[in-house]
Length: 388
Ligand SMILES: Cc1cc2nc3c(=O)[nH]c(=O)nc-3n(C[C@H](O)[C@H](O)[C@H](O)COP(=O)(O)OP(=O)(O)OC[C@H]3O[C@@H](n4cnc5c(N)ncnc54)[C@H](O)[C@@H]3O)c2cc1C
Image (cartoon, rainbow, N blue to C red; front, side, top):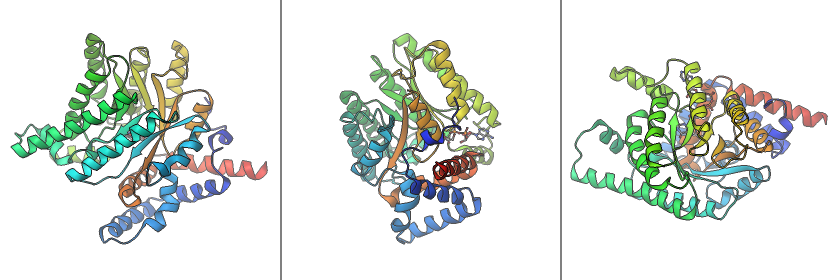
């Protein structure tokens, strides 16, 4: 699969003006000093209530997000859909910690399910566990400390939100993916999601957990889980990612003096990611996998295995996913070749999405090669259009 060669396919949904804007953006994001300074200024501006919407909305927000509301995402959904790239609406308001906020987020996810039920270009819904729960509560549960009565009730409300969303998705025929977070809350999330999978994945994959393959315990977890589901005739369904919290994970392990849950090097993470893909693809008729990555080698490896074992590119149990505004060369090339490809399309009020945007900027700075790859492809396509 030649992802780099066909920038015309990769960027055909973007105008030249948009490409120039993206080029400018990735140049800034590629500069660690600018990202550090910009992130600090943004956080400060938000804290003191300084208006940032006017600056962010037409620039970073427009590149990485679909809109402030579900309806504002319609244009993006349509434009991606024109090239068979599907949308996963991702309500990305972060940093909310109150019960009213969690209920509001739940209602938003339910609205994304309603939207998906009536829209052929939206195959899944998604949510982030800490959009529905206090981080501190999940952390406390995972440490095994006895909860007081108020906390027990709070935990029940969190579980109820998970179940309401997944039940709603099931009734509407919209599979739901659940994002993964830091390892020191993830065991609790896994417990809740496993119960949901055992309940809703009997006929087909409806609930997807996420495996962060930078964790050295995840391959074993996957194999054991497959064994457990096999006995019960349940579909294991996973979104595979490498993991977004590597530095944080290592720092915490170092500080508290336990072994880091992360593989010691990138190569080991890459191997684990590709092995998990292989395991799930090998059971494609009884399992589902969403390969969530911007890594060309992993996408090409997955496509190679599919070809080798005779899985059609558009098999309903196999999909690929990238984030809006990143790696269009993978998304659009694979979609053009008939694979099921989705983009996470984040949305939400500009100010609430800022933590997500900062993470994207930091990720593009820290992931070796990601920004230079985006810059190279953008420059190539702008030059191609100029000369054609
Ligand atoms: C559709 C989609 C959904 C996502 N959902 C989630 C989610 O639910 N939870 C989540 O945590 N993240 C999620 N992510 C982010 C993801 O985990 C990665 O941070 C991001 O995609 C970069 O990894 P990559 O495979 O795309 O690219 P690559 O550039 O190949 O890999 C970079 C990643 O490799 C790992 N890595 C880098 N250096 C080392 C090292 N020295 N040792 C060990 N490992 C290393 C890190 O995980 C790093 O992020 C999602 C990404 C996508 C595309």
